[in-house]
Length: 133
Image 1: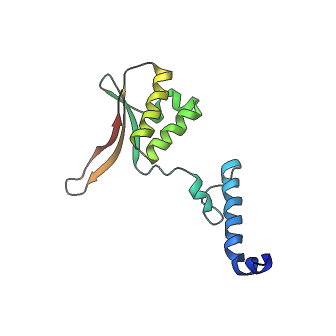
Image 2: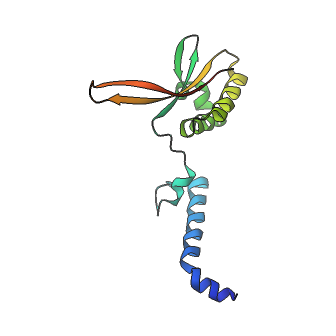
Image 3: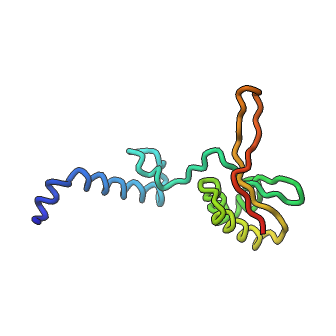
């Protein structure tokens, strides 16, 4: 088929794909907000929803983003964000292994979400998934 005919037929999808690739690049490697200029960059960012990663160490709960490692280690921060976005056992194991290599403690990784009961006006946390060696 003639390239001009293909371009004539599919010029709009081609432009959209080029713009999406351009915006994904700007949002990833520049300071562009992922939701600006059409929002294609939103697919390059984590959406953690209302999940929170906790470490249970000696019966105490520590929020992952409150640890020193979260603020000083970008790989750990990325693993926590991945676990908040997709709290499956594989991702929790990766986070567990990485934290264990840095902290050398016995602990349990838990992903919890907040749950609000409108009838009783109470808020509690619900265990979504957990991992422990």
